[in-house]
Length: 183
Image (cartoon, rainbow, N blue to C red):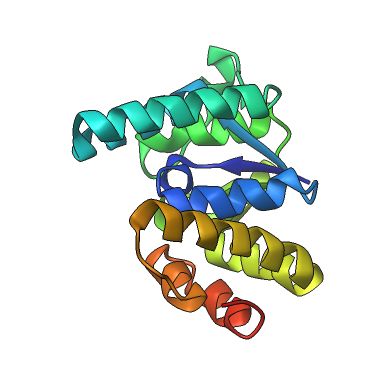
């Protein structure tokens, strides 16, 4: 399964780490475009110079770790597409060009299911998407979440509970599912 990751699910660190950690196990193939990564970089400017530097280094690692993930498309493809927010058409073009099955996004209103279905695509929010994978592969998702939790504890200097970390990362359903399995 190929999955296009929208900027809004790449930008938050824990969400990105969960999505890409699960992808690294081979459950799905992640896709994005240069523009999606550029949007992430622009969003990181809100965090100041340190945030920008961190996002740039993480984006560089993405291109090294996922060299086949970045998709391109002809201008003619984007020109024929329509979404409620014209600024999101590039995401749909990237998904079509990459032969994605799903767009994972927090932005449901700008990706109507009927329009996506016309292109052979569906939409999922990251919590439902990851929870579905957890239902099929609980130990795999639990292992990824344990690594993410350990990294969050290391970077923050705090001790996070799994459920609280996932809730903060806008993955509450997944956090509830994992709470019984891992710290």
